[in-house]
Length: 359
Ligand code: PMP
Image (tube, rainbow, N blue to C red; front, side):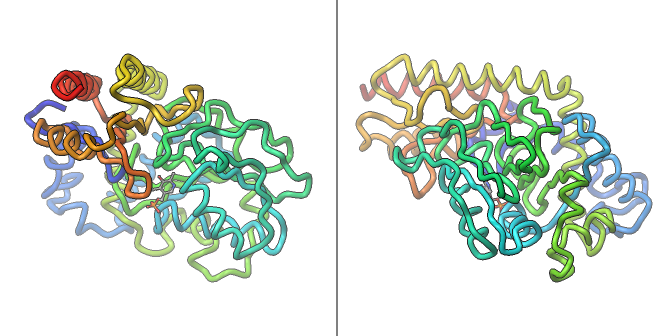
């Protein structure tokens, strides 16, 4: 990031593009020439309407999302979707879930409240260090749910399963817009915005019109997809600042050269970091190489006792947020879209130096 700011490796909320901050700062007190801040502007104003319309249009462009899909900006982050999906689509039936770790587990727990859950694949046998292949899809499943990137365990689906007529639903919270995917293979994609596309407070949802039609209409108003589809995410007051920031991040992605360029950068960054981990016995990775996440790089120091020191010294060197998730320990570097290559290089330099002193 330069500009005298530390490099931010937090898993989420996470690093934001510097250009987005600058633009938000410039407009903070006078948004769209109104003389008002976006924070004090009505969500029904024509200026805000422009923001939400543009955010949607740019998202469609970036991910190549057709008109067969609705795009929603919702409350409750990704966790609300864990519940809304089975509430709207399960109604006592059966759903397939692939259990790849902590986040998939949370989605499963909610689904179990609303119907039968069939575990179509699991990597629990090896502490969620790989993505199980060929999910066992039930013919009568209402949908198959996967977690495209497990933020805590550091594993990522490289190719998505072919589910035929069964709707495929994916939690893409930690890798949305980080790589090119074919949206047409999915019936619903959702993500908390606070990693790759904005700040916390917005759940971003892409839902196919055919699936939306099947949703349970007897639910409470706020928890029905229909409500938010019909009101274009403005049934109640949305997180206006959150949607405003998403719009800025969408512009930033397009300015980078779109998803292809962003993906290319992400591949390069992950390679640099994994190469460093693999080049020595001092550090080691925890997951199967083929399933390694390009967003959340989970690793350890062979002498685990040195990890506290690593975290402290890296912080003192301007590298923030490298502590692993509290449930797993160890180290984790989250290198989302907005992490510049220089940030990863600075981390690798620090790792080499640390090894020299402590190896
Ligand atoms: N799914 C994944 C893969 C996540 O990483 C997270 C948050 N870290 C969530 C869901 C939950 O997101 P939220 O906090 O927005 O509910």
